Length: 342
Image (cartoon, rainbow, N blue to C red; front, side):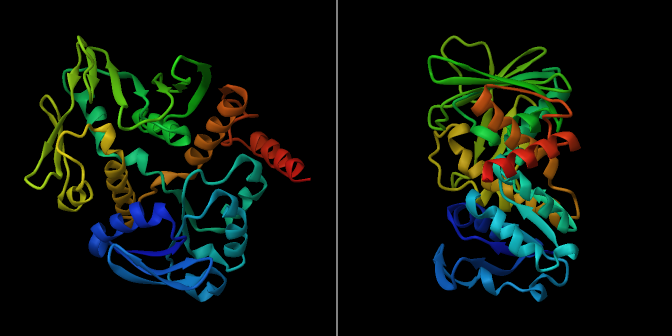
């Protein structure tokens, strides 16, 4: 099955991540049209692209059950959703970029109900090294208990990455504290998994430290550290062929490999985050093309709420009045959003 895409937005996120992943997907994905604020011709990766004005998008463009990939600035999301809701999108699907919407705009969340299906373009949750760390549980390491992201995760993406390692579990509690480096965020998930995010993000210096029942795993060893190091297997062109951890290997296919080109041979796994996200985006597109759910909307909204409340209050505890999964919390956030507007 071919995923028919309509893209709204042509910023850096689309040109540097989405379009390369779409090109790598081959026949699995086809772009019907690209829309932006104004009609123009853009050159991306040496190719000329015709861009239509968003105002020209009509109901007929949504015929045939396409997937609309909405990737616009956070401040523009409510207006874009309002415009799309007027085009009768009930038979179309929506792939909305992170962070879905700001909490202050939560009064517009009902606009997401107009669509047949909604998923979130959270590529961090599908990066190959996440698959490797989870697969290691089946080897000699035992259960994955905790992961520390040392300067290697950011805001709601960090929450989503932790959730992926928690196998999709809900965040039940989170707190933020100051540290010598800036701040530390501690996330506890319903299945018992724990995640610590040390800010600020700096992929060039960051690393991952995973604690299993029977040992530690990292992508960059510290001096004197007793941990197993993730192996990056490169082909002759410097593209990632596979990631390894002892006898456990995650192999990238040819399309995924091409998306990892450009990094120097000695580059660490975390420093390859941009390439890993391109591969993650491709994997999301393939899920959607095969009729799977992708990254769930309710998880994306929770990522945003957890990040916002940690930023503002330093604490999040899941309840019917705080988790956007529950109607009382949805009502509270919508009311607060309307009050913030007035």
